[in-house]
Image 1: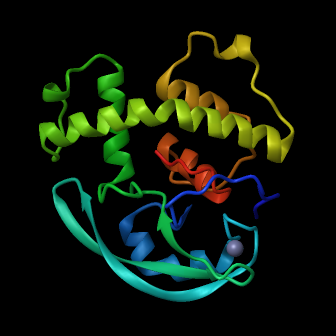
Image 2 (image 1 turned 45 degrees about the vertical axis):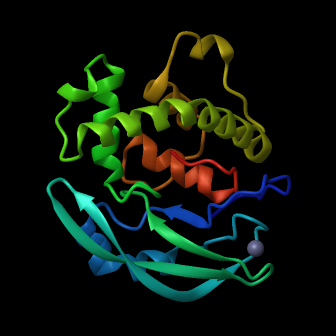
Length: 203
Ligand SMILES: [Zn+2]
């Protein structure tokens, strides 16, 4: 499924692959093994093939509930590194639904104050998400553009993105990538690409 791999990857602590493994937690719980089976997961570090390597449970906040979901691990046949395969509907390090986080960040981006945003997360948490997002956005944009060029030989027209910011900018860049299955929101799709080639950044 992945067209090429990047050998100039920076060192990172991210041992994860983000993948589309169903639209919702319910679909994920019922069918994630089938989704995994259908994907040809490549090692983001070296491009090697991978095999299943156990699983663990983690919690995820979904609106006002907490669910426990199994997370599959895979091991690279070439470099022996293990990677957790994270569904794109959860934010890789935050234990919250990526969709919920995206809605919150979208609201703030459109001018709502963090304390006015509707979320199950605390105001401090929302503020932290926003700070992290602002910090990571330029890195993510840069990494996606460089990935686009390295892997697909494509560039994004500077004129077309002048004055475009935030999620709109990400969306614009993602449009230049080949279509992939994803949960249909920007952070998830960006993370699928960012984690597939060891860019060292996820949103
Ligand atoms: Zn590897």
